[in-house]
Structure formats: structure tokens, C-alpha cells
Length: 421
Image (cartoon, rainbow, N blue to C red):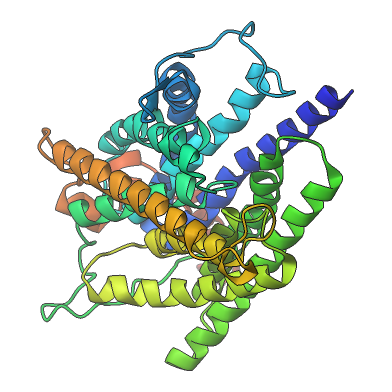
């Protein structure tokens, strides 16, 4: 009975994590300009398909196969249903839960290179990221690798998913370069506002809901007490992140910026993910506040440095993935306490080593991959004329808000005119 309950719980959470791709799609398309909405949606759907297939055949084995020197796995590639259970979970239940995580890490990068990256090279990137880069770091932490041996704590992936995705996103944004018109001749950034805030807000709420599966399912058991604590801390951190980002932006700019508030909620979710099982509700609020402030400063810092990240992927996932992992070493309670619970600097040092090593590996591997793809015929970036026209028309041949809407508008306008003659 326990195995059945555990399997149902983990599968339900995996469905929620899968549904997060709808949230990513809405957030990214809403934050981008109207002329690129279809391409953004296409990339987000393609990531799910490619990531699922490559993770089944390659990624799972690298992540959870027999350990080779603490660096990667060497077995369990395309495992069969007869493979050994993982705890109380049948192999395919556990594999599916991990599979939807792998696709999420690659999706983070989509927003950072939106509106100018080629679909073909992004698909190639997804195969390598979901099949190799993400699983290697996952093995270090969750597959019995060298960081697991040191006692590194990353409950649901602040480092494994988000810092890794953020590192690859930063590398992609640097190599692909900023959007045309983003920076003036003197280097000052120009605003390129989101085209659809209702979509972006709905997307964040979907991600917020999905995160209860992301973190709650990482218990891997249907234990109501453990699940309740994890989900409460997750929710409070998100709430604090949203409010902190809004207030910090108001003090900085004089405006209540919805886009910053939405990213603040995501920052709070990313930051609490590493320690949702060992950080209590009150301290989770502090984690969320830190995340909300950092995401605002991260967005401004990247713009000043000339790096164009249309959706704030690096500020949300990269910065807060690293900082959230470090905060485990400060706020963790339990068997291995953090600094504020009498644990000294030991855990904080291990957390720092693990998250910085993982981020550095993801950024370096991502940069090498993007740089290598830039040498391929056509490179990593669409033609200038296509970028100016918009990728929806030039690459996909359709518009997100096309003839149907314009036709209805024209019919209404003609109906209001007096009949000729």
C-alpha cells in the first residue's frame, strides 16, 4: 500500500511539473514582443519532446547509472521495466519524474536567447543540455557522485536544475548577442516591453502551482507531514519574493513593475528549492525576500553589462539558484544544521563548493556548445532581416494574432460605415 501511495503521489507531482511547461510558454511569450510569440511557443513545445527522448536514451543513465569516479553514470541507458525499483517507486515512475525535471532545465535557456536564436541550433543545444550537461551535474548531487559524498544538500534542484539552467542561459545570451535595437550607440539599454502581461501573469501562477509538485514530489514518498512542510515553505518564499521585488523596484524606480514582481515570485521559488525540506516557514520568508531583491538587481546588472536576457532567466534561475543553495548553509535545521542553527561554517562551505562548481561547469560547457554551434553553417542567430520582421512570419509563416482577429476588426468597422451610394 505504501508503494502504491508513493507512486501515485510522485506521478501526480510529475504531472504538475510537466504542466509547468505551459507556464514557461506563457511567461516567455508574454514577456517577448508580439512578432516572436509563435517561435517562443514552438521552442517550448520542442524542448519537451526532445528532452524527453534524449533523457530516456542517454540522460538517465549518465545521471543514475553505476558511478564512475564520482563524475557520471555508466549504465541504465534506456532502462527496461524490469530494472530495480528506486526505493518504493517502480523504475518508470522514478524515471518519468526525473525526465520532466531534465526538460525544465533546458527550457530555462529558451527565454534567454528568445527573439534571435535559430530554432535548429536551439534544438541541437537541447539534445546536449538535457542528454549530457544536466545529467552530469545531477549525478554529482543525486546519483551518488562526488558532491553527494561530501554531504552537499540540494533537495529539489536550486543548483541541479536552476543554477545549471541559468549558467547555460547566460552562456547562450552572451554568444548569441543582444537583440537588434536593444542597445543605443552609446551602450545604454533601450526598453523592449512585454507584449502581453495577462499571459505572463497566468504563466507565473501556473509555475507557482507546478512548483508544489516540483518540490513536494521530491520527497519521493507520500508522507503528509514532510510534504506539508515543504509546500508551505515553498509557497511563503514565493509570496515574499513577489512582494520584495515589487517594493524594491518601487524604491529603485518609483514604479510598481509587474514584470519584476512576477520574476520576484519565481526567484523566491528558485531560492527555496534547495532547502525546502530543511528550512522552516519563517526563514523561508527571509529566503524569498532575498530572492526578490536579488532578481531586480540581477536584471539591472545584466543590462548594464550589455547582456540581453529578454525574460530575466539568468537573474531568476542562475543567481537565485546559487544563492538559494548557499542559504541552506545558513538556515538549515535538522541533522546537518546551518550557520544560524549552530552548525558552523561546514555545511555553508560544502554548499558553496557544490553550487559554484556546478554553475561553472554548466556555464563553461554551455559556452563551448553555443560557441561551437556558432561555427556551423548559418550560425546560432537568424538573419537580420528575419529578426526585424519577426520570427513568427519569417521562420514559422504565421502570426500569433493573425488574420482572424484582423478580419473580425475589419468586418466590425465596415458594418459601422454608412452604405455607399
